[in-house]
Length: 243
Image (tube, one colour):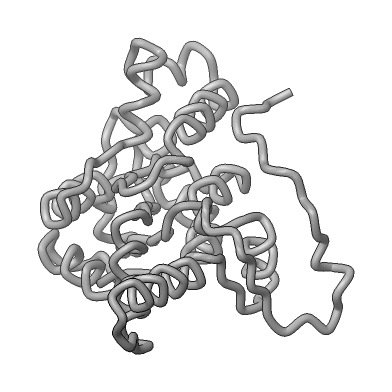
């Protein structure tokens, strides 16, 4: 019934290769294809075609200029393109600082910030807590998937997700195609309750959500960042990883 995030066709089923030790896909847009995502989910090293594209560009430049190019030139070109194209996707519990830290990263990197909760609010024309009460969680998750689908194929963005965005595998895979997913791991005792978060408006509810989701956050993330420090400290930790 839901069709917000339609995955591209699967050309190869990696389960047919039980002794597979690595995957390289020549496709570079998206940065991670289904083939690459499938391999990585299975714990198999996998890369897309962006590095190959960068090498082709560097060698073409060297040929045009009549000079010898080195592997470090390829690495530099690859890193520059990757950092300009790759989205930074923040996941984690409500009140872990996704939007605040996302704004800090956006300012530091000169990238636009998109908050999926804000996108949902714009689409439904009311606060999420009111929509939850009126339509229920399933309807909200559908609107959330729609919001993610609307931006997931874009590049060069900071994306702050809602706390429950990772509950649907299709959302995570969509965000990973052009993004690096970072879990802001803020300790439970530092999380706070607020009335505008329907599933964590009380301490009991917050602790229940945390216990239900913590493993999902960890399994969905490419990088786990200790988010117990200040905004500046957490943002600096993220920047040290991606740069």
